Amino acid sequence: MSSRTVIRGGLVITASDEIHADVLIEDGRVAALAATGTPAAASFTAERTIDATGKYVIPGGVDGHTHMEMPFGGTYAADTFETGTRAAAWGGTTTIVDFAIQSVGHSLREGLDAWHAKAEGNCAIDYGFHMIVSDVNQETLKEMDLLVEEGVTSFKQFMAYPGVFYSDDGQILRAMQRAAENGGLIMMHAENGIAIDVLVEQALTRGETDPRFHGEVRKALLEAEATHRAIKLAQVAGAPLYVVHVSATEAVAELTRARDEGLNVFGETCPQYLFLSTDNLAEPDFEGAKYVCSTPLRPREHQAALWRGLRTNDLQVVSTDHCPFCFSGQKELGRGDFSKIPNGMPGVENRMDLLHQAVVDGHIGRRRWIEIACASPARMFGLYPKKGTIAPGADADIVIYDPHAEQVISAETHHMNVDYSAYEGRRVTGRVETVLSRGEPVVTEREYTGHKGHGAYLPRSTCQYLS
Image (cartoon, rainbow, N blue to C red; front, side, top):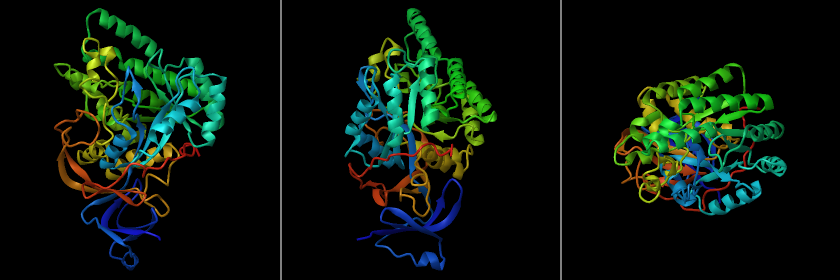
């Protein structure tokens, strides 16, 4: 039995077009689009009709950077794959790419298998994996080839966190050389972790223990230095590079310079760097701990460079780096020592709305909103045009979005499994109304109608910006 749905009367917005069109969905895929009111649109018949008059019809969001159930600092990220993907759906995101972790002394395969076991049968939306490479050796390098073949085509390395995830320049170069051969994409956490650890130790010795010092020791110059070094290593290896969670003016300048030289260098930023700042880290009574993440929040004046980078395409993607830890019992592990505060913030549910607010505020246009939140991450991570657009043959991951509804973001009403909101009390214009994942309603007129196990694992092709 084939199932058909038609969405009528909405403004369909993709990265390239805006058109008042009706959308026909058949068996989980987009079958056809036709301009509203035309004979072609009138000919669409279906068992289910969704009226999108006065609304936007947009592709489901693709969040290329999440950490569900991630172990960190003696605890675990508070969202499971079940709770985290449900919250993502509420926020209009229909695909996540999470990070499987290789532990030092273990194989990539062990790490990947462990993350498959966490996610399988639990996700409300579709999901893929990147691989965190913590232990570069000859076996790891061989495994990278095998993972690319089976659809895990991106590998994250850390210039930060010595003793945990850290790779030295030689290990990074070897992994980049392998990626240059097998078509993989190296993703880099670019901060000089060796230098940062010295500054952490010195700050604690001086009695500087409050959350705000987390931002002060993780200096923007050390993000820029690491970004520059990663770019040069990638250039030596002849490999593409994707720098995650770019937060600082100086780091954007390094990416811009590399791109002006024609290098295959890409950058993402996150809503927390666009909307929050060191003012939040400095909130009294340890409240600043809610905003501890790495790279850290920067002084407000850095935001202009990030918005400009998004407009000029020197930054291509906005992901969340969703890695939530509850204030009570988790963030509090760092009372009296900011270096023990688990690094990470919740946000998978807020990204699409915050970026729509950026449209309202005039930072970006509507199509650019869809580009940085849907199409570009899908292309970057080998999922386009199955994901990230509304076109015949694409998966029917579609959001009916009310651009006029107002809402107040709050922990009282969000669906993430965390006891605070990083955007508590913030008023935004625009709200998700209905969400389809492969044609199935996951959120229906602000009611959750999805279920765990609907989400399918996505093997990915290589980065489509390179083909």
